[in-house]
Amino acid sequence: MTLDSCKFFVINFKPGGEGFPHYIDKEYTPELPTFNIHTALPELTVFCDHYTLRTTVDNLAGDYYPLDDLASDEMLSLCSALSVDYFNVPLSIELSDGREVSKHYNLFYLKKYLSIIDKDKSEYEIDDFITDDETVYCSKINRFIIKENLCDHLFFCTDIGKPVCSSDFKERFTKQGLVGIDFMAIDNNYKYDEWDN
Image (cartoon, rainbow, N blue to C red; front, side):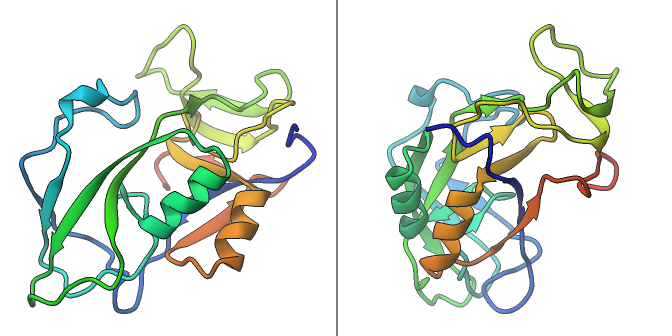
């Protein structure tokens, strides 16, 4: 089944309220491997089987924190149901006040990196600072036309450096009562500027 007739959405974290902090101070034990999430994941063998996250926030209540690479078990179940290609590592979380979090969380990384912009039909500017023969890195997009025959439900979009999902993913996320993110449609009104994001 292809999803080219459906809308796709940029995923953004939705901060505000208890459990949805603008910033999560993080200290991992053991330390996480160092890598650039915008390029690709490192070899998965460099990750440990489990991590402990110590943070100064009082609560976590969202199901997906894309800026912090955290996802609840419920988010993982949704991704598995839609055959999303991802990698996760279980987490123990120690909050600042000693309370336990209400959900079980994991480190969460999308394994599929896709450039979805139709280079012939879209209006965009290339980021001259980053060069790659295979991938387009956009500094600005005034008209974003998505390639045809796209059939993935959730992936890391290299064109804008953010996760993008299908309308099916969005509908299921909302219907299942999952929380913590906003969905911005990639439509005629969508604009991207790397300095505004």
